[in-house]
Length: 427
Ligand SMILES: *Cc1c(COP(=O)(O)O)cnc(C)c1O
Image (cartoon, rainbow, N blue to C red):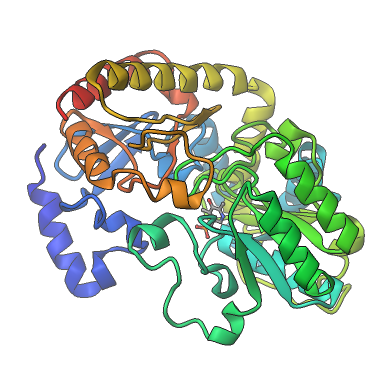
């Protein structure tokens, strides 16, 4: 793979930007090597600064469910742009977006827009604390909820990859309010509530944890979360920043028919521009300022360009309902990779749901964070490089989820399966 221009840019970037990147996992630290710079993206493909074409399974970390630079979204942004970039007053897109989210997401009666997934989870936690007048929260080991202070405790994603799931710079007193337990562990959940029940404001969970690979709930586990939080007067927060609109229009809550009190959203609702949202029961949401005492705000929240892109993205999902065909693509990927690994005697688990799949080089299926950590990350790094050399871009970390877009249909998926099959054979 040609990398002259990218390498040159990265040398300059390192002098100007910490680690040369604006989000740590992009630096390729856990897989080794130098990141490529992208000049342009279209459909299922990234085009690097060195004019290489890559089939992309990162999809800008989730948002690009319609593929890159989708013409409908492109036009929506263009036409919003005619009217200006930001007003600082209410605008009509905000009402349309709120109505769409209320129609689509089961838990949403009211919704507040913000600018990232991190803002959404941060505000959801503050709202839960303000509403319940309690301080403690429960999160699960390996779940990533953005870089919120009280949530960067045993976090997944880039934090995990870089070996600091517990970030520096967070006062111990903050972290002490966060109780961390293993996902899928019913006993630990019961014990935490026995001990701290009356002071637990909320449980926040990625309903299908997907920032330490991809982990699926054991039968009945999400139901247990719902019933135990209800019993103790704690709120249940689903962080659907990644799974929302991706696995079903209404997210995991629609798939499993469990309604959380609050939902954090992001990624797909921005159509590739920076958007997040917190939604939930009106009675709880009304505790946000200016109606209530919990402060939450944003200079660019509800930005017309970002919402035009997001609305276009959601409407396209409503019209096209691509979930079945995306599931077929995901299944094909899983089948192809599992079978070639088996044939080669390589221990590989490929958990998959809809258009998400992950690669654990592991003898046994993974049901929680400690098991995920037992995967062979060196083997993943080698696989990542073999794939990249063959024109396929996988997430540059053993603990990230791969995403498929509707633009991967037809030739891109066939080509990718071919290349990844060869990459596994080369290990
Ligand atoms: C990506 C992600 C976030 C953070 O969103 P940002 O827009 O990066 O701040 C939060 N929660 C989950 C589950 C995510 O996947």
